[in-house]
Image (cartoon, rainbow, N blue to C red; front, side, top):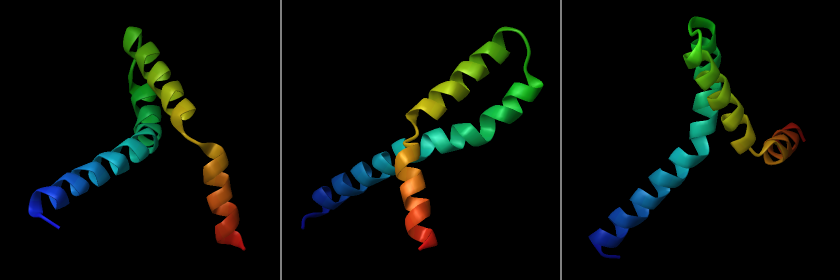
Length: 70
């Protein structure tokens, strides 16, 4: 495998992991931002939090938890 191909694959993998972990990071940070914000910024944080919840595949997450228990 050539070096440019390996770099391209690593970039794709890093981007894939970032896309999968971003909603979880947002869910961890947004409640703290909601506590300290007010007005228009609070509405923005609520929308951001709800968008993050909608992007998470909870069925897949529960399936993973179930497989870890057995």
